[in-house]
Length: 293
Image 1 (cartoon, one colour):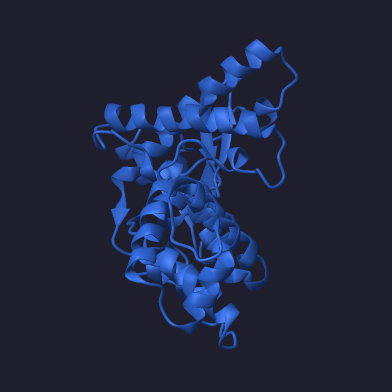
Image 2 (cartoon, rainbow, N blue to C red):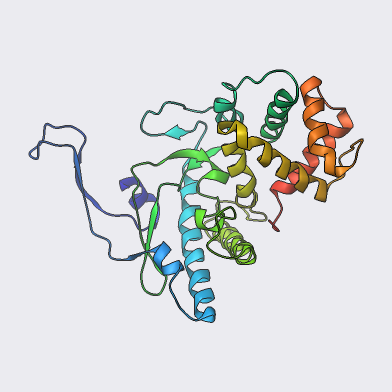
């Protein structure tokens, strides 16, 4: 937090004193922080206000969050993981990050083995570096939606950008348990994506011509979940394949509705043809860059 106060304008608490050992006047590990007045962003987001005011307030707060999150891109790393030692990590790259849990899953040869290899194929299409994450943060805002402070930095680490500081805020990706309509979520994702693009230019992080890491969040978040959930990975992969079929023509013997089944069977036996792999990779890349999800 001291580093962030020196290098960014992100509103974080001032650290007065800290100790990680018991040999101190208190006799316990501790940290003394300045108080930040504000209300949780979640409460502000779901406040009962007229629709026009709600849209204006939500747009304003998304721009404020995006501006703060882009500043974390100043801190980029070649390896990822938590500052505190965890059961897994550090990670040397995107493939290592995604496949750590997957490598321990050893299905029998056949369809499930093909499913695993299809998942690894998609993971192999990813190429990201690590930056500070925002998954553990709590945002505080004032009554007008101005960002008052960001707290709870104890779980911070370095994660892939599409899962970290450039990802969509988690309340914009709850399509599986929506608190807003799907159309509303799509609208605010587009607003946030534009806010990230503007902030990238303003902070001179990059030219901001595209927001790949932000648009990729919905896909990469599911790829993160899939290796840890063999039972649910089938639904995730089927959804990804079905979306790819909408944007690119992948050769299939029995038609697009059977594409997922055919891919798993083919990967289970070996590798699909070069034409299938090229089309699949192109479709997946286009899906990652989609602004319509």
